[in-house]
Image (cartoon, rainbow, N blue to C red):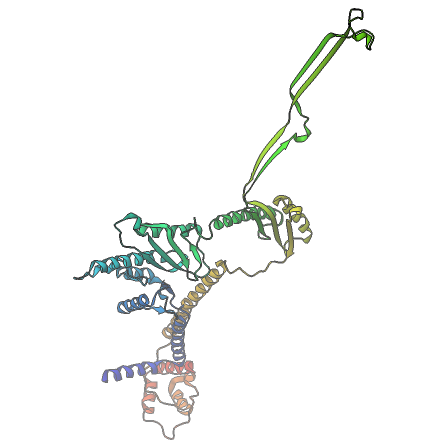
Amino acid sequence: MGRIAQQLAQFRTRWDRLTPNQRVAVIGVALTALFAVTLLLVMQPPQRYAPVYTGLTGEDAAAIVEQLRQQGVPYRLSADGTTVSVPADQVADVRLALASLGLPKGGSLGFELFDRSSFGVTDFAQRVNYQRAIEGELQRTISRLDAVSSARVHIVIPEESLFAEDQQPTSAAVVLQLKPGRQLTEEQVRGIVHLVSSAVPGLQPEHLTVVDDAGNPIWSGNEAGSATAGMDEHLKAQRAYETTLATQLQTMIARVVGNGNAAVQVHATLNWDQRSVDSEIFSPNGTQPQVRSQQERVQTVEGSTTGAIGVPGVDSNVQTFPEGAGGQNQQRSELRESTTNYEVSRQVERVVQAPGQLERLSVAVVLNGSAVDPTVAQQVRDLVAAAAGIVPERGDSVTVSVVPFSAAMPEDMPSGTSLIDRLLDFARIGVIVLIPLVALLIAWRVLASQRGAPQPVPVPQYRVSSESLAGVSAAGLGTAGTAEIPGPPPATPPPQFKDLQELARRDPAVVAQLVRSWLNEE
């Protein structure tokens, strides 16, 4: 305590030796330094936390929090207890440390079930543990997919039978909990199916069922594919067509109105029905039949015939009538046959219409009204209709609107926000650096002025009235020693007055310098 009291006394002595201006300067420097430190603490950005693991189960979250407490790492736990966050600069180290401890376990046990071997385990218990280990490992692997939040795998491995016809097949079921707003593609579904079927002995893809957490089937074993087979390919083709056409139109319009002054959106309706048409056409295009073969047959018969003569009646029919020569008749016949074979023209067509035919096309164009003349809209519409191949009979449409664009920065463009943050950081650093510099400058000026000021003479301090000081002047100080000292005059001269008179007589220059210092203080 004595040492502290001595330090305080020394500080009080040094403080008493300072002039009023110096005291104000010292107080100002101290307040400026205190303000700078306070500003540094207030304006310092809070420590950023980044999630080290998300979607944790209760067991994994509790184990991770316990390890972080033991290691002394600050952490934050989300309200639902599924996300653990640590300082952003320690995320990688924490993950490596937790991975070395086998955390997180994903809410299920894998082959670490066999790390703790115990005596007396039956063969049935070993088979059950092996099945549980496979299920746990598959759950961990599937849960690492980008669109999957968690997974449950159930495997049924039947007992082996002596007869092959009595052997039951291995089957499995997978329940997936997808992340909000995410969907699995056809390739991802097939990848999960082949992953599970390859990891389980004797499991065929047709004996595997995959459903989501709402019970909707994603893969059914009795189908050739998933419930959405082919839909992803059709959607990809449609989006690729729309994107390509929109990019081409955007490039063309930008040459007319400038970059950033137009936005193009394309919507196409494609027909994915596959059709096969067989047609047979006779005499196409009005072609006349052609003669293939012609056959003609002509038959002519010529000859004479003998007929009966005489007088008809009874007399001519008896044998007593006279004999005479019979008459002859000449005959001729002709038969003509003609056969003509014609070759009939025939055309057989088989038309197979490929899927993906364009049924309808809609194009919307928005022009920046603050930079584009509205009279250009019609010309842009004609250009878009010609470039996109618009067919009004098919129901295609083109819409061109001229409206002022918003000056607000889109949310998905973080460049503006990051620039503002950087400027604020620079301003914060500048303020923090500038204030101490100003404080040091003030302190330097005060010390410089103190060194330049005349040092006071160590003379006992007391008040001297103007009459007494006039008496000193009359003793030989001259006019330089005349001054008005504030304060009421003492009733009787102080005992040091004689010493002061003696000093003035012996060394008047010192007394004059003392008076000047008093005047400077005022």
